[in-house]
Length: 126
Image 1 (cartoon, rainbow, N blue to C red):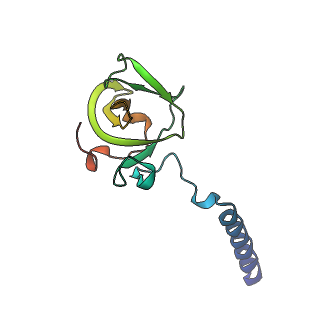
Image 2: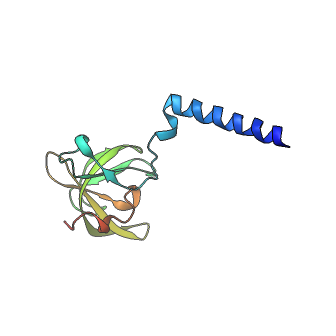
Image 3: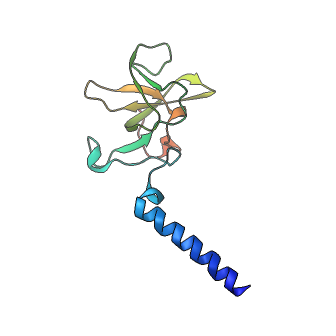
């Protein structure tokens, strides 16, 4: 019994070492909460999140409404800088929208498709 435990522990340790060596163990996941953008954002204190589970990509609108003109579409897994939040039209019963930083001004996406967690806790209202 003791030998099989040691053998199992050795297999787990070897597998963990292999994951660490490839960098897979610390790769960001789309389901993670928002995080500080650091040097990747317009402001090191800004918050970033990932687009997740958007069936055909996430459309960025000029206003927080699905009927507002679309400026661009973001692919799942894309990192975005979240500047603020507001309410808008319902997407799957969820009315919170995120204001994204872009050089041409805010664009809005449904927070339903972002990995922000509870966005109202750490980002100001638009």
